[in-house]
Length: 75
Image 1 (cartoon, rainbow, N blue to C red):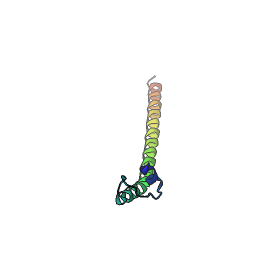
Image 2 (tube, helix red, strand yellow; image 1 turned 90 degrees about the horizontal axis):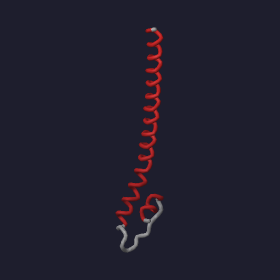
Image 3 (tube, rainbow, N blue to C red; image 1 turned 135 degrees about the vertical axis):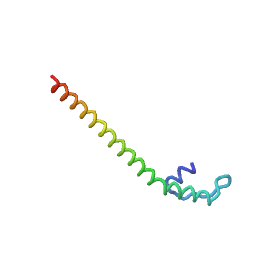
């Protein structure tokens, strides 16, 4: 429950048995700092994956085209 509030960025009241207030502030700062970085890295990963798939498809088509051309010329 605490981490859910930290991720949302809401203020958490310190209760007995929970993390100390200084640790809550650190966790909150870490989650707010790392969230945009995580989104950026996931976007970069998706873009890289799309580029790789496009390149793979292009090379496959190019190879098929060259193979077809090769068979036509040989005959």
